[in-house]
Image (cartoon, helix red, strand yellow):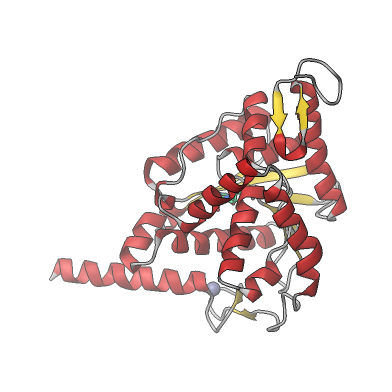
Length: 309
Ligand code: AMP
Ligand code: ZN
């Protein structure tokens, strides 16, 4: 097997792209793909400061590595979520990466805010992933606007986006389909642009990239995600991909180029309101984050009162 680009012995086979690469040509291909996505989709320029949401997993660390290597201005944002040892290891890996590369990192420990995900989920009896999603959205948005970043980048990859698309299609979630794009422009003064530079890159490719670049990342899946529907969709798409290489990419790309332009505007219901409590965007009078905090505090006080009685 020879490298499609330079004819040296190939080390990586990419069936979806019908190509084989040696180490160096794979790294070149991967980084070029990310750079092209950033430029073609007009995600951000080299003059803009980008806040990169870094979980400690392979995708977001690979994204940070590539963006830094391409000369973009990056600051990492890591939320230490409070999901047991999994979060502790994720935080360790993220901090070690930032230190080794001499890159700025903002870390927020939710337990310090009294908002550790597992505790909040337990107190409010919400699914952990729902509480976690609310926290992430809130802190990404708030820190970006408060610290003056015009754009937030996440490590969502092709597998994430194709699985989300499948879920949205299975339930015909029209408003969600209208918003499923690699670049989302702000619809509220306290929102910033949100971008997903890895949206065309598979998880398999980021795994190889991280391995070749010796990126040390948290390997375990989030324990709260076990049994999540999203993983069932990913598994289905992987089976389809094995039978017909390239189908994941075609599914997403054709949706974006052919179906999306036909959908009503993502902002059809009008822009979000402003949360009366925190000033961030809200669907309703109070935003999802403030509702969650309020419920958590109330439950905690009730428990303390009944414990004291
Ligand atoms: P997930 O929701 O875990 O699939 O992650 C999707 C993307 O969200 C990741 O690639 C990161 O960019 C971001 N992200 C997830 N978890 C965190 C975290 N704890 N801190 C910062 N960013 C995160
Ligand atoms: Zn609020």
